[in-house]
Image 1 (cartoon, rainbow, N blue to C red):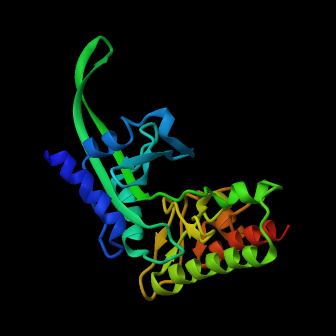
Image 2 (cartoon, rainbow, N blue to C red):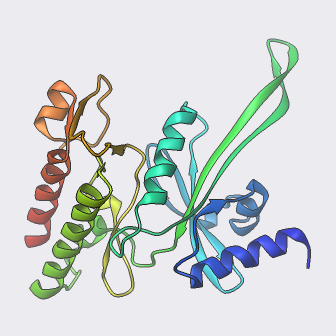
Length: 245
């Protein structure tokens, strides 16, 4: 068994060990399990990247490849990883690992060949089979009764409370597309690309760069860049209305 197979089986074993800590993953492994990021294994696409299904010997994972066309600062990527490594809860998608790879590749530029840095930034998560809450809300044949809808709403509340009270994390992009449902229809919050981590004494901050999804952004954040835990509550209220329909 070669080294790459060993890494593949190690990632496979992490899925079964709920106490395993997230780890750095080689780009070669993530290419292997997604068949070099094959279109046939694509399961989702957003403004910041593409999500692929990664096939392991005894299971599957989700691999998010951040878009190379978007300049993502190393600090922003690091902040997202920190939030993901802290967030461990039944209503948060489980984070398995990350890859930050930079390679020097010769490219032609204005008639000359130059050595250019090609960056790859990837995140690896547990694979959630039932897709997003957005699909459920828009599918009139979803067939969920009120009891199941209530459990979904309650699960989102529990995940949000954990983020705010125990980890001091503001998600800032809480929308139906970022809530996944497992095989038991348990909701799991995902996509922490815009999240902010507060220290113990801090409960608000102000930013000049407002990012998020229109219709799910708190008025004070959209207008003045004020970030508080209330920003996620505004997003959650919109989602609850959708579930009650």
